[in-house]
Image 1 (tube, rainbow, N blue to C red):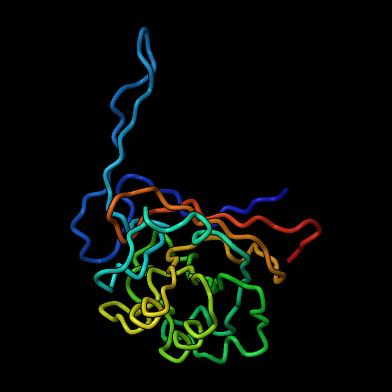
Image 2: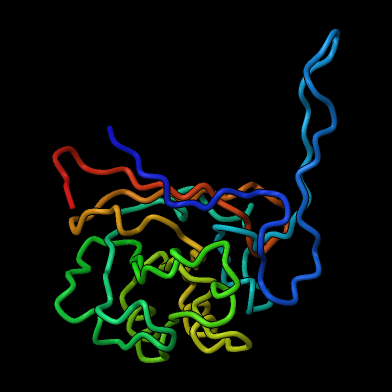
Amino acid sequence: MRLIDLSHTIVPGMAQWPGDRQALALHRRSEHGPDRHMSSALEFGCHVGTHIDLALHFRAGERPIEELPLDAFAGRARVVRPGDGGTPGPLAAAVLDGVDLAGIDFVLFCTGWDRHWGTGRYYREWPFYGEDLARRLAAAGLKGSGLDTPSLDAYAGHAAHDICAAAGMINIENLAGLDGLPDAPFTLFVLPLKLAGTEASPVRAAALLDPGSER
C-alpha cells in the first residue's frame, strides 16, 4: 500500500485567504515534564490550508458536513495536468479533452501553483476554473474536484463555485504534491472533521495508489 500526502501543513502564522479575519494559532497548553504531558489547542477557520467546501458554502439549505455520508469524501480520482497551468487565469474546458472520466469520482488539477505556497504570490492571483470548465465538470457526474491553488475562482469571483455547488460537488482547495501522482486513476481520501452545521473543513488529503501504479 502506498499513500501520497496531498496536504499542506497547518502552522502558526501561515498565510490564509485574503481578508479572512479568523486568527490562526496553534497553542501549546502544556509541555512534557514531571507529572505533566503535552497538550495542544487549535484556533482557525474552516477554510484554512488544504480543505474542502460543500455546496452549502454558496447555497443556503444544502446539507452540512456531518449529514453527508463518508463515501462522499472518498472515491476514484485522476489528475489532469493543464499545459499552461502555471499561468494565473482561467483554465479552459479543453484541458479535459481526451481525459477518460468513466468510473471517476474526483478530478484534481495539477497546475504547479503550490510551489508558491508560503510566498506573497500564492494568494495574489492563481489558475482557476473557467466557467466552461466548471460546467463540464458539473455535467460529468463527479463527487467533486480540486486543484493546488487557493480557489476554484479568482479572488472575489464565485461563478465556478456556483456551478459546482448546483451539481452538489465537493470542492478541494490548496492541494499539494499533485505532481507526484501517476497519470493512472487512484483512490482519493479527503475526510473532513465532523463539524456540526458547517460548510467546510480542513482535511488530510491523501492518494492511495494502485499496486504497480507509477507516474
